[in-house]
Length: 352
Image (cartoon, rainbow, N blue to C red; front, side):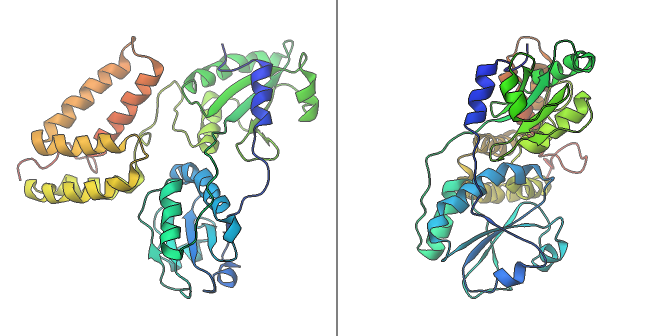
């Protein structure tokens, strides 16, 4: 069974797709200096289209632009594709994505790094503290992204794709906001006509804020379709089921985890306090508490704690009795634990 294949559910999802242009200003090498002339305070996100964390931040950043739309003549919310516009990124020392920098009014050359939380509340609060401007945050809504296969029962290519598409749907079954669906276009001709389906199978991706669906023109393998969905949904699925090594990780914690790994026992106590201060900025992330727990357990028990937990979670992932949602949880936790090992080294420096 596909994850949602009934016509009523698909059409109800399409009704709720967001329309309209956002309120985030997109700049490039050619027009950055024209807009960033110091006349307005500005928050700038430097991102890369292929960056998973950037994709996660994207809808939140769009909401931020909407929240300050009523005062857009007093503050700028800006984004720059620093992968395509490398000169701007290099000028401001961008070496990872996403990077957010704050340009106070009158400042064009020396912005301040934004190191706060990446949730809407934290970003809005930061701008308000810097400018005195109040946001108008709309009630949070969750918009589902949908990949739809328009097929015909008599179509040979559809029959060939069917078992592959079935595997993809199963792999994404726990992704509540990334739906894999199909539609018999010979029975439900309205949507097929509306979206100009002229052959079978036709795959179209309905994004959360796209006015029109994106045609899927990639390969018809499980790997190809999975890669496409990860890029457009910000997910971390892998062919065959499960999650890749980045699932569950909080990018902002990577450097302090690495520092903790290389530290002596005494140094770890200082780093642990530093980490707890940083963690307060990411309380909206469900895995922040787990990071805190790992820091505490490693200080208490050493690297053996990580080794034993990784082994235990690996057994649970391989077990046959766990629910898919719990298996995802085990993947996330194992990834976090393994992130405490660095550059292929096998254990933390317990002896120091």
